[in-house]
Length: 260
Image 1 (cartoon, rainbow, N blue to C red):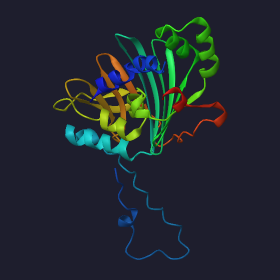
Image 2: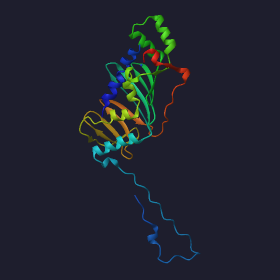
Image 3: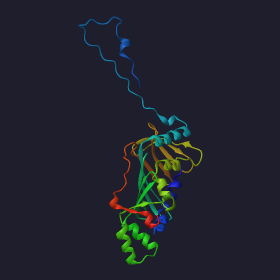
Image 4: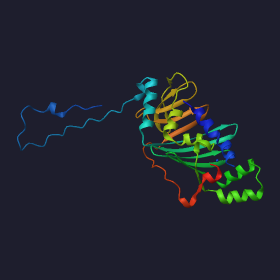
């Protein structure tokens, strides 16, 4: 699993921000007499409905189970990914909502939060006051100019005119369902199964590729959690999220005017 892809992608947020300028039962009929009872007889006991058996997908080979888990992510209308990790830049937390038609994410690096909304090729970026001040500090902007930037940009959404050239393309990929799946669900080595355990209340089986472990629901093959080096990302809310909408025009700035 490409946990490092997520780490390196989200960790680049500070650099990008600075560039801006952030069992079945038997039928009872088999025990009935061959001759039907007279009409006055009591009503026969109904045939019990067989109880469906939940399959145990942990019996599948590791590659097959991995492919099934990836398929669940690909066919789900939506899912959520949350987690955090620590690198040279400090602690980074991510909370991403992914749907078929759009995605949104909150990325917090070294205590500086940034939000992003991706609707097809349209991308909106929101920086809090803390993010704007951090950006101004890194660019050595004067105190007066910093206050102007804070007033103009804080909590506003910037509509990026050229996302690929803005320095935020990596975050766009994290907040886009198809590129997220393509970047994360890639084994780094031979897959092997681990012992089963309960993860977040879910009976799961682990798939380890020598670099990290993907925990998969033994009943549904839904991804539950990805672990690597003591860090973890949790998957949840499958088929329960609504697609994001564009922010109000009154809260949106034209990124083209800012060179974005």
